[in-house]
Length: 493
Ligand code: ADP
Figure 1: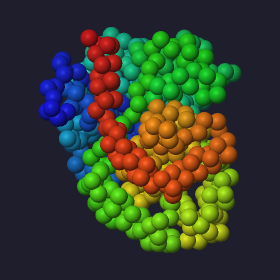
Figure 2: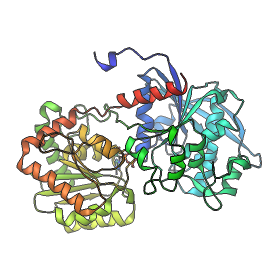
Figure 3: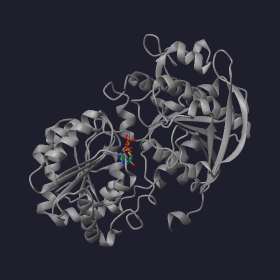
Figure 4: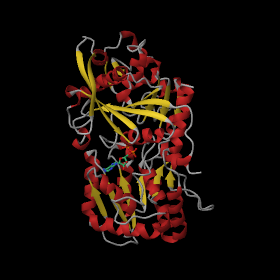
């Protein structure tokens, strides 16, 4: 029986997703993808889902104009009791209800994130307004599923300020998408803006070292359940190296911590229907379709047009997290006349500049696209032979999943979700989905790329079998949505 024909699991569960971004309205990274795809997958699991995000100015007009005014009220926020407007704009799409919290004062900037001075008040307001909006709409979910530090105060508000109100009957889950960002600021500022009582600014809840409060930490204390986006990352963050200063806190709360790996939206990422490709292809004709996309990619980017070159793609935020210092160190060694490198990303100036330098020094072989470009990303996924993801840490990572779906072999560091989703190639059994290395060293990344190239150039049949294996791999949300549903049922049987 086809999965979509399967009977809906009983009973129905209602879930409010609260987070700071959601594709296609606003997205800066993987969180935006999850906030889009997981609610849709949950509707197929007999869940009623409402997604609550801020109504930023940067949300494209084509969505803004479809929003319907759902109501408004005023809410006190800060310690001085000042009142703030909360508007609710609603948009229903494909079975998911999106409620946008509207307030000109907080969300009038172009980008969702500006700087902590502005972001701390913004997300104090948002956390409280989201819960108040649920009470206002009289829509009381079984589960409130919060995402990252921007929604970190939600579980705290739920059990304190909102105690005794209808919404307090909900259970809360806080998902860690990336522990690096935690919403840390001095106690007086967070105390003022959140209006939370003094006793919460204790080491067990919000207090960090010295005079700082940590919004994520407090949320982790108060959430009924903590999840993160892969099993390996769930273990890693309990160690000092990956714990970002919260490893002891997470070890203490490990009894309510688990990892569920992300999926991808397999309709959005589908080489059979993808209009952004030069040629669409399926598992049956991938060995013909991929080289044609490679040639189109080379032409578009001014690379030497030759389908026999080994094209390595890299699509990433250009930050320390992504292992780019390793890539920079090995680029000269990779350029052997048979290899081309395509980088798509924006971020830290040092990486933008170094990739530009390599492009200038190796015209026709290296291309550095220093930009955010969804359309180009699709062509790179389809036209590359391999995709590099050598991250220092990677909670889940989506690019390796998209790559596999497009028959592009991932070369990854064995950390977080990369370790959980990419089985290393075994030359003896001819199994595996990609190539990997463990310690964070340029030599090991280089060796992994060499292993990939050796297979590509000397045992193409085995390489092609891996391409097909990767395209057949289930990277959809179905599995993960089932696990989230099971968790919801555990919290609210
Ligand atoms: P993170 O959330 O840490 O940035 P993920 O791998 O989880 O990393 O998700 C990255 C997402 O953003 C993927 O969908 C990827 O295709 C996309 N992406 C990253 N950089 C760019 C870019 N410069 N242009 C287009 N898409 C990008």
